[in-house]
Length: 385
Image (cartoon, rainbow, N blue to C red; front, side, top):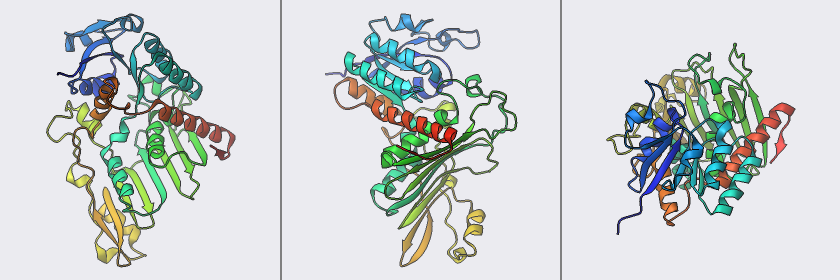
């Protein structure tokens, strides 16, 4: 018997819908890209010209009343998430919403309760759980390759010293805005998935740009303190003039893993590739990194060696009391271990064959940690979680 096909309605037709959602929906046999809400099409940006077979609506209120729609995907700006998700749930739709979930944990609680009351599935698009370097780190921790983790650094650093070309909602203060909601939500989610809730949290939010008329928090550093002494640090920067940006640095008693460059799935999707395209999500070999020559591994030369080799994915492990660095390729993506997994798993959940890809309760916890980090920054003190 053929699997049931679920009709998907998308709210919003911006970059998120075009790059991160519609291409993935179209890759899942159990899903049908059925409808979309585009409020203000233009001759240059009209979804009906690109997808002439789908139903185009001008208002979300109209689309959610379409009984043929099974699942709604909310891809609009964070400040709109709460009302749109609530609207879809009240009309009996399953919902996947872009991160950040909603601006406040109180709103998250209301939506979670509403989804349970209407017996609908609710999930959040935390796609960075399927980044290949993050999957690599999961494997390293699961296999105890690094031993007990003592420090975990996760970065989203870029060199964008001006707001030129930035989306308007990313340059002004509004609910769910700022670097900690935009990119920090991904990093906090990954750490929470690996290690659970921290015991305490310290936040530093602010602006690195010389000109920031909207007083927007374009950068953040958050320290997550764990009971066993481990500290996990997330950093989002817009003034980081590096040729190769650090992504992860994980240190344990038995070894360390340092990774440069971002996961390449976003770049591949932006270029028009899909998860079924040959080579999708596979990083070029020079992103795997080069081992530091053993003859340079002296205490006085360790830092210099790092700069000489510019490693982008280096695993250092202890063998016979000697620290040995080697190039370590990132996880080789296979379906479903790419961003497509989010939609594949959601389709299975609707069919009663599993759970949603990201639990709304997890996403609510991420929002609560963001709230605490903001409070910590405002008050200048570390807070208990």
